[in-house]
Image (cartoon, rainbow, N blue to C red; front, side, top):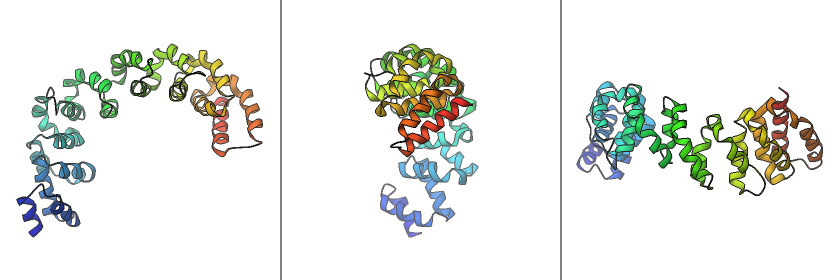
Amino acid sequence: EALLARCRAEPLAGTFSEALDFFDADERVFDFKVEQAAAGYDRPCTLLLYEGLERLSEHHIELLCRGKLTVPLINLLGGLGERARAAAPRLLELVDDPERGKRAVLALLAMPSQQRAVLEYLPEIYVADHLLRGSVFRLHPDREALARAVLPRLAVAAQKMDGDAFRALERFGPLAVGEAVWVIGMGRLGVEDYFRDSAVELLGEFGESARPAFANFFKLLEYSSTRTAVLRALVKLGPVATEFEIPLEVLKLELSRYPKAEEMALLDQALQAIRV
């Protein structure tokens, strides 16, 4: 009771609120945590988002939906998804807010009934914000539409060796097959290690469209520093890359003199995938 009283008197005094964690099973403490989250405080919102969603009652959620819409509370409402749809009208009013808008869009995206209202904002967030990109990709209801909207923009930057743009592009895997021509050109000797290896592994997602890259793959297999990415690509390509079976068998014999466990295991995986 003394701790709760002090926390209510000084809600920003972290030491007191941390002490309450020892009494987390007490419903009074949990109710207080919800009250503080509804007031927009960071720590209780974060604790509820990662540890307490399943304990929230309808009364708790109603309180949160009426709360002070700080970024931490908006994130918590997004974690609740459709359960927090009562907050949707207030969140919709924030989508153009410079500080809270992106988080409001993601919270609404997490509610299936509200997704259509925020689809137009998602391509820009995906391209521009690497911190929110994963959530947009995971929650978007039409990943192909997202790919059509963002891949042309990402490709321009990725071809200029922009690592963030390339990572954003490669997340789409086989949906990025339309970019195969320049990705093939990047997956060769002479290209910076990160971009070469990433391009090779992405080509593994392209199936038959990766065939023009096979000449480069054969060359890359010759060097220990470039071999791993090719083997990973071949595991993904499987029977599409049957012409690699004999070269891989020869390579296996060569490497068996001084075998490296991880490399040999990956080589075996590639052979197995090709033979399926």
